[in-house]
Length: 561
Image 1 (tube, helix red, strand yellow):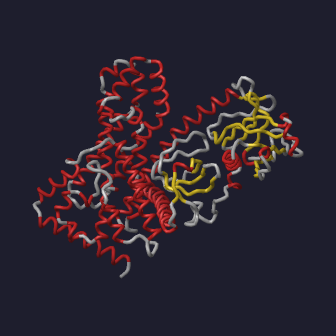
Image 2 (cartoon, one colour):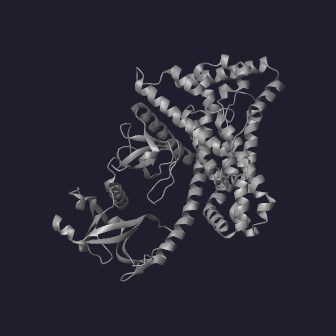
Image 3 (spheres, one colour):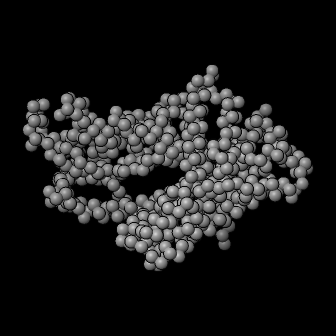
């Protein structure tokens, strides 16, 4: 039987099952039972929900990796896979669809085949609904406990209230409308047909409020830190509110960052649906549209934050620069900082003995932008940087040098094929560590120096390439680093002996360095290949989404008078 025939047969089976359920139960009772699926659950705050959900993903992958590695056929046995699907990863706050009392009482689990149970678990998107309820609960606590707290508001001016809370009330209203529509879909019965159509509708028409909120987040954080430092009354009240048992030990800031965490998580949940949807099905079409809209919102959020942060950063850097000869304009809308830091310049070394002469070593400080390199020297007070040389980034070349004893360790050469004086010059630099050297080389000349990158692969890797999952969140400390979240899957493109990796995250293609202590390697080649295939399907869906939206735009223009 061909794929189309199987799809039709499966759809007819599910329709038949739905009819039997309706015929065997009173309609009103079925709806009331479905309502209780959401209403009777005990909810934790979204911060807890999110962390435990990610921990569950990590543990599930570990079990799959272990089973796939030790199993007789190096594949995951179907029975074991079913057991993994049936596990509930924490009591009360979240449960799998098939473990719900209402689902078990309905008798549907006796009718569905095992593979249909897994399919319904994935297609019902139960986590999407339950996690939205938890997120909504956290937003309501932010409102009642902080935003509407009279004692706290009395310590703030009206402008400070706006700086700290921004348009959070609009974000809350958008969440309430979204959750209401999700619950209405759930109330139709224990069998859920789809929710991606709801996600698409709200992402396209309601979720623009996320972009405004997230774009203002850097100002929000600055205002919060300033008020904490300057306003003793606010500081005291805030400490008391954070220590309240309602917050469960969570900080006020953890509530402020919820909207961006949620919109990012929604995108990942829709990605998971898209990975499992039947090709050519209505569910896939809705998931493609929903993913396109969510990806656009996340990009706009990131771009809004980056634009503000980058402009401020360039202004601050330019104030510290002292051009002795040819001045280079630093501030530009198309420019941003990639890496900055100290390196030791080695002047004309002839042999190992000459390194005993300290005059040969000169501390320099480099500013590397996406299109420009500035080589500077710090002033004696450390507040200014005298610009010694500069070059466009396209005219840079690096060469790694082998270690030859301690004095010649972590050495690389940097060639400026055309510097500010239109000359070809070469610098010999000594880095502080092996990872510092590799990071500078990869930042200065990324196209030439990424050793593990396979140019024949769309995502820079094959199933033979190293792949890791993040087991501990890490916030980037330097411009060339990447913040990683628990359960992220990353292709490793570069690694150093002293504990750093450079990788590309599968779900969004972002690249950067991170410490190897926060990840663990995925051992099984079949699993690595599966994750890459899923990633390629998401990439294909993104392309389909772009074409679909472009086609829709053309149709709308054609029907306009």
